[in-house]
Image (cartoon, rainbow, N blue to C red; front, side, top):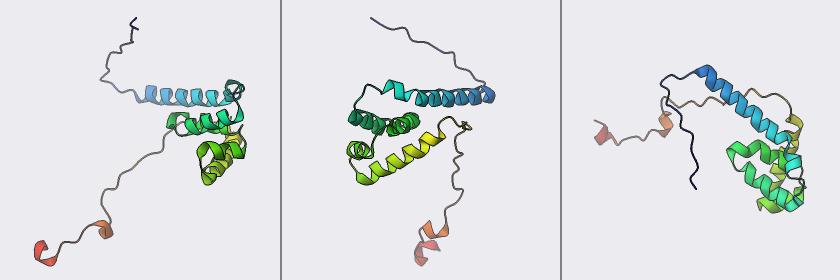
Length: 133
């Protein structure tokens, strides 16, 4: 059985207001998902929750959900799931900090990424004198 796929007509006009509104809506959806995590993972064991938290945290779009799940895990479970004491401890601490921030509004904007316009002279290879002339 084939499933019908939606087709969208390409638009030559980029509406920045629509893009900003969609970005803000996505942020609100992810925050809502993070709020309802406890209900969704209530039936999982502690080790399953910790493994799911590590998995979600490793995906950029599920990062906040991973932290919300990790906030319900013990330190030992996160250490075992992550395979590293240092990573488990950092994840545990970060999930506790993030749980205090749940419900606070976020600006929904991505950080601006800039590229260097020139390389520092220390990184530019120096040509031998006979080649530079």
